[in-house]
Image (cartoon, rainbow, N blue to C red; front, side, top):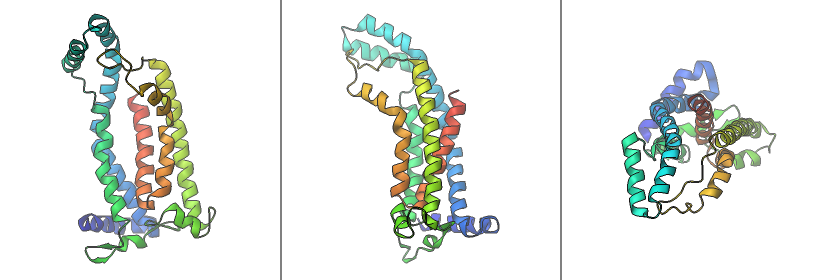
Length: 239
């Protein structure tokens, strides 16, 4: 972790002439963009996989009619169909899974008072008036919602809320356009909880507001940047 801390410090020094006291925050945004660029091929693969799975729904429906009374044969037929079409049901999970290490690295980096036995110098950096190692509760205790640090969070919450509304509307349009049936298990029964999950899915982006409120500001910056990137990326890939 000390190696990563040094990289953030060096990048912040390079950005200091442009961003001054917020250079470390700018470094985190650039780091997030770099991670998203690395993950972009997986995101493209996930988009292709989603489109392919949607196109397979009529064929899967035919298999259910044909093998509905034989769950084991139906399961094999569905798996064979996915293998034949080279469609992975897990492709959509890969971009998110590959980003988790970067998020947790930032979380721990800005949560620890010491790194390698020395004081964590990164905690002295700020985004405008809000320390990168503090949380929203700290901002509320130091000036309230409309204090100097609180206003930074107001801006972040406004951005996250705008992205969440954008994602909500796009998800609702996609679900209405696809009008795909609720996924079924191999035995032909409805997968437990999937109906409720599809109802909740459009609201998932709003949970980012909770994440931003409880994690250190540095990790919140990663979440906000990544969420905004994801919204633009998905709008382009799934259009």
